Length: 353
Image 1 (cartoon, rainbow, N blue to C red):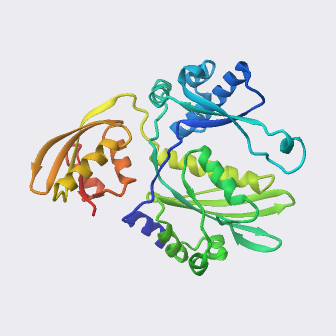
Image 2 (cartoon, helix red, strand yellow; image 1 turned 90 degrees about the vertical axis):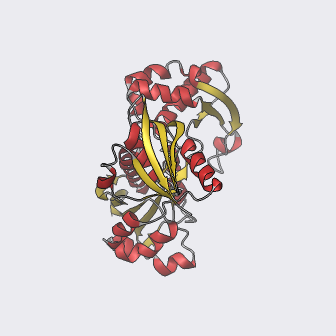
């Protein structure tokens, strides 16, 4: 309970900007135009999942139709030699090609709107992943430098979903605070110090074990500001339950933070910011608001002492704007959510130092 309360009240969230949201890489056998077109389609499927936050995006009829003619969404592409996946065999001798594709962001956003899918902005919550794995040798926490490569596996899945995942370093500081036994037992209060160190928007706790030979089970708990989410995954191999667990966490994050399905821009969202004491503060606030995902226009409506009011045109309206601002570390909320509702649809903040 203590960790959950800390997450809710934490003054700083380690939201991260996803810089490759509209990019994807696909393995190809050669540079044949027909192969390239098919690879463009696969890359567009990956981008649709990342941009919308929805695993089922490629099955949407509008997206399916777009995949048949993906070239119109492509901005640029290039071929690279893939890093061999093994040290023996043909894969090491003849590296496969990868096709890197960058898609036109406005065109993809328009496609999502036409498909009735949300557009999840570039600023997304980071999640601290704490997974205790039980083997014959005992219980061990997955860390950023584990020899088995499982941390890289988890981060790769997160990258496919465009969700920033943080693995513990397990350095001296972590070892003094983090114990596999606490993660295994779900002792949230004992993990408070470690969670505070990484300042993540959420914490994903997992305990994985081999129930019978080659059949694994993992119990998951995702801690977010709005509560606790728990589920169970089973599968053949540790990779199967890790894959399922990260995907489920990404689904829940997308549902919580993943933006609006609105295809139009709502105008006239009022945002009041206190604590603006200098031209530098004013410039910083204006630049921040103008750079927010989904914001197409910012106007100043009034200046009163240290308080400046702005009117924003924002895709998805007030609620989407509120969620995006909550992920940042520039403006602090001055009112509880219920009090915010009384501001005639406006939002009230204070500029942080």
